[in-house]
Image 1: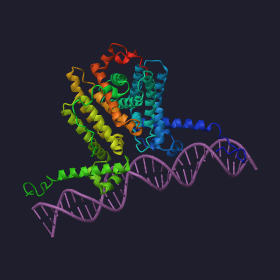
Image 2: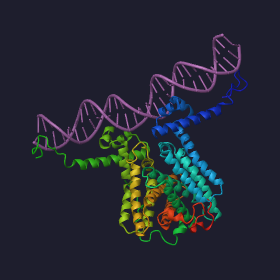
Image 3: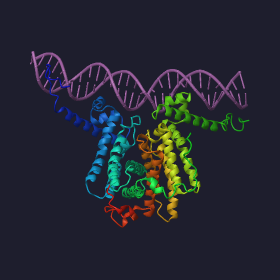
Length: 240
Length: 240
DNA sequence: AGTAATCGTTACCATAAGTAACATGACGGG
DNA sequence: CCCGTCATGTTACTTATGGTAACGATTACT
């Protein structure tokens, strides 16, 4: 794009401002998208987003590849806060349970305050995407990965098998997510109650892993999981 | 023999065969939809489903209110097996851990054998629906509810607070679901390993609830949550 | 046979994603 | 001072798909 010195039009004034300006613009559009989502719900049309941004549709497509790309950007921004909290907590020397509690609390607070945005982000509406580029998966992976890394280090330092850390992280994220989803519709608990309950569960599962030395084989070695010959439910194909 | 008693057109011969036949037909269409989903992925168009069923689109709409309705029917059928297993297990006197293990295993086997169908069912594509009628929510609620019932009974029989059973069930379902989702893409564990790991986690969380008397308040009452954990878990500083 | 209900089809409409082509305004050079 | 180029914007279109309307054919009972 920078037509070098050789030709009549060497470089024009494209070097500076451009990129920075574009990023700024992109961010503004993402903000507009968020406003539109809050107003119209998770199924906003691109037209509505454009209108909210005060421009017309093709502008959006100048800055975002497609709706999924915008979705990704919104998702990134929305979860940025959560990630920031998480990473901040990582540096601190706070005890891990408090850290975990704070993470859960941040998440619940977010989905409580931004239910529409939450639905847009978490309820993946773009199942067609390659899943490796799925923004939710990506973000969950980021959080899970961060949790898993810490946890794995901890396991290793205790001489335990760290292979399960990632599994634990993913499962834990899903646990909180599903519980939060349910909670939004059936508010029979206060946020604090749910938060402590989830913390208790997550911590209990962590406890179990640690006690088992990081491997279920060790946990259930002494007592077989199927004491009486329970039928092997999964033996055959599911056949519907 | 039908037309006489009251008016010229009393009821016709709509009583028998009709309903039964329609249900049969509906089931056949659901089967076709499943085949189409396996072939085309979770984003099948109604046209493709109709083609697979050997009919044309309006036929589908004669049997299903809209795509969400079909989605619900597919979801019901697909999870029917799992629910059956679960409910059968309810009657049996199998120890709850084996039951839980079997449920997890059944789920994992299903998503392993039917990844496309799984994506269609679990990755909710119909975020616009009233959520109270969302098929996934409905199904998850069914399973969660059944699980919750079991453990609520157990909790009560131990004289503990059963109010958290539902929370536990929802969280547990989400845990398994998210872990399974991740596992499908990052197959670093065998199914058996993941199953036992998840069982360990779920059981550990249940354990924590039982030991806390069903309420996090009791678990964390004696000590502020910001301090290091009290239970045996906290033998060492488990900083994640 | 005639009447009516079920079963089926083709052809259409509405919405929303994504694109092409065109319009406007600022800056630098002849 | 006018002109070309780049950035920015708009209108108007295409395409895909969920959903529907109107119409045709088959079956069965009186």
